[in-house]
Image 1 (cartoon, rainbow, N blue to C red):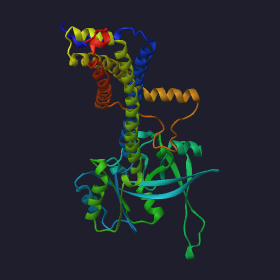
Image 2 (cartoon, helix red, strand yellow):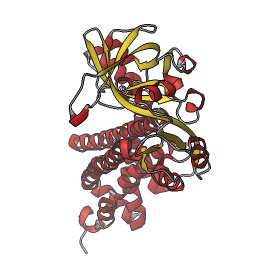
Image 3 (tube, helix red, strand yellow):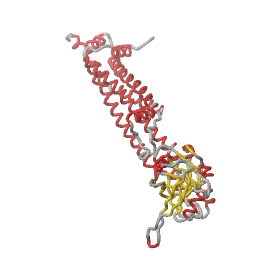
Image 4 (cartoon, rainbow, N blue to C red):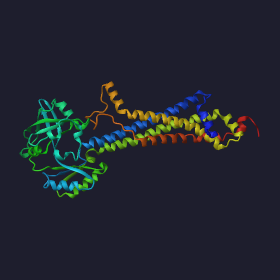
Length: 414
């Protein structure tokens, strides 16, 4: 097989033992440094991709992308308003509901929750919470029966199970802002959902007709809807709200949960910058390796020059030698990075079992596990960038090697 002389000699130098063991050590350190940098960068970005997907596919699948809530009372013409919202470009489905806050009590246990009184027939147009229902079903939320679906975390805290009765406490304000005794209502638990995050312990579902009776409303006071592009939810929500004649509070998921998306993007950007600097530092070890290799091979370089080797041939020899180290480091790092990233969730789960502690608490974060999703394009870009950085690091030593004077090295005089 034909191989250019510079490639042949460069690869031979890469595999040859160095006279100075310190040169070998620096060479191995540069490979390991590049590998570690690439591995950590792939794992970190995969974790950020996992969080981003969990935000979209999990959190945003159980809350409306946009909400239009009346300032006072319910909608004057709910059906017409629903049709108007659904006809807005970008809206994929709409449903009516009522939200209110209350306190659930069972014996001596109490839990404050946000209640979403839904229309079961149209709720699936907007959310996919049914995917996370472990016991029961939407169909069990029937008007007039005061039924309830809770997160499993809440049910565990209150020590109740499906079929049990629980008390809802609602505050009421008397004349002159005098606080009166809370109103109490009995509800029956008909279902449990488990998403694995904050919402498990913060949200409860009931039928909209029961909420109307409790809150003395004639109609729903909120329209929730989903959109085809979650990143445009704010603008689509405004467009839908401006079409209606009611006085409204206009909110999208960006207002309530947007900080999560911004945090993920910020951490992702910082991680790329910091870890690329780590790779850069590792690549500059290649400079040290090649500078010492050039000093070791001064005699060989002089002989090659006397045999007619051009400056560019000599430069390519050392570029190939340094690029080989970078290539090995990048490939090893990419293989380990992809493997660990693909199994990151399982690895962290086993680590949590081993240490007996949850690294991500569902009470604090919107999920209670560490997600990961490998993006093939990002792996290619990371590997290619690290390789190019390693090649760039060879330029100075290679240039220095090409300027060696054979006469001085071989002891001849002019």
